[in-house]
Amino acid sequence: MNITQAEVDRLNSIEGRVRGTVFQTDAAYIKGIKGEGGLSLVEQKIQEWGCAISYSSIKASDWFPVGCRALSILSAQEVFSWDEEDVRKMGYAAPAHSFVVKMLMKYFLSIQQTYKQSAQYWPAHYTIGKLETPEFNEKEQYMIIRLKDFSVHPVLCAYFKGYFLRLTEIASPYQDLRVEERSCAFQDGKDHEFFLRWEK
Image (cartoon, rainbow, N blue to C red; front, top):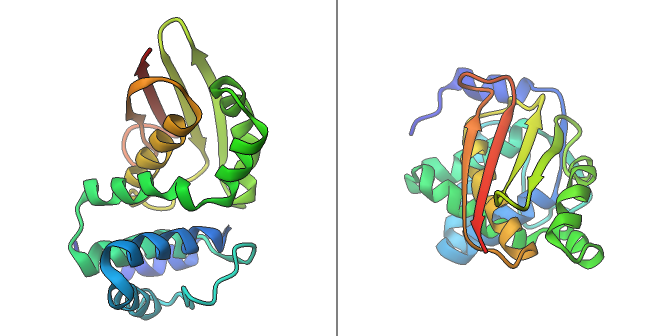
């Protein structure tokens, strides 16, 4: 894909901040599959797009413009000609590198506890948006994750599909987990709503 300068400018103008840990996670994944050379190409591209990101020097607790969060993924997508499935795989791999996920797993032992408490950890990553956990249905074997007031870029939809799927796998004993985005702020919905189903 080729992102336009107008879209780059829009992303760079979005108010809101994101923790440096998300870029550390991106860097770990890219370096793992594309090496240092691949990571350097992505860093060059994101800097061309106006984000002062140096993956090797980022601190997890530092705050960065939220538009750079999308541009980091879009940089990798453009450099490596990734499709939506590649971005989903990137999101799927992310929980292994997230300090927030490690905190969740330390304090909440069941999937029900993790689900109920996960919303309060969103502000540890982002200053915009709100994560909600409106329904966990043990009998019907599904749960819903809702992300409100978060219209950054559609590339994050694919990323979050992988991320939420892997997080649920880590926290649960369930088998054959599947995820779909049933509502999207960039299509026909005002919120992003991710529907996860499983087999016991």
